Length: 283
View 1 (cartoon, rainbow, N blue to C red):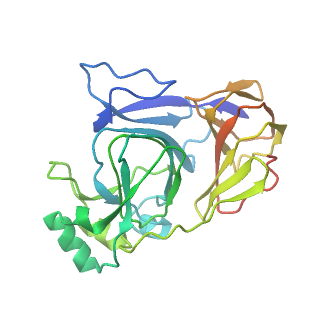
View 2 (cartoon, one colour):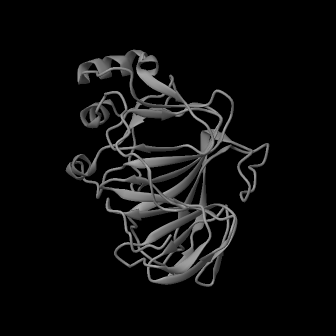
């Protein structure tokens, strides 16, 4: 494999939507709402356990208040890795919000008490969001995603979520593990985006993964490797990666040196494992 279009897995969620996003078929009006679309390699192709997972999220209600462990805490609980994640906002209804971090530092006991009585919703920092914004949420951050959003999520590839509060639903909570791994403090962005070159913006660079956004025409060779593959998520325009035409609604995985040609109008999100920016990726 050098470049492959990933297959989609539609995931039904009670907080999902029937109207999705260009490139995705809407959910039938008389069927369950779709909350997530996962992008995965076809069975038998590529890595069995890639380090990253790309999702689209479609929200009509608030998601649960949750937290994810870091690598050390996750491995202590028998998982391969933790779960840091990032969100690229594609669409935001008026007054759409996400909660990220707490309004003030809280002790573990205070966090548990607020989760048990529901006041945790008021203790979170609900931030207004708009289309085009990018947020990075390190493992340990207490967070929730609000309604009226279409979001691309880049995350470490592990299905591991500790729910602290779910608005009275009957879904399982994970207070012991969640409180143990949470860092209930006000959110401070751990990374300040910067332009590496014209049209190549580094959105986040942390121990788990790097995300970039390319917005100018460029061609050359993408220096991906088997040990450090690159996920490509087109947001606008079309381009060529190897023999593949990339366009919004799809995600491509590249694990070897591959030629590319991105013409004017391209808007491309890239992600790759590790915290160091790969200056060899031309952009």
